[in-house]
Image (cartoon, rainbow, N blue to C red):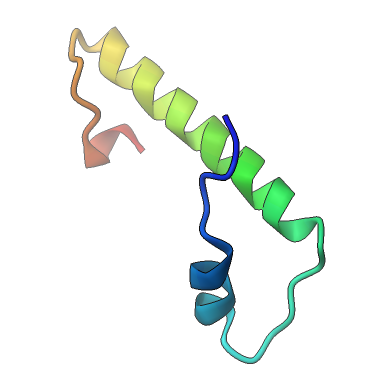
Length: 55
């Protein structure tokens, strides 16, 4: 998986701060890991629907 985060939205959220070029790749990896863990938790609870509590 790749490009899970929208750079423009991240730039807006960071307001007046700058982000290093490799920041977006690292953030994307963190989001991917978070999604995998949430999916695994839902599956462990016999659900196909990932819910907020899975985060």
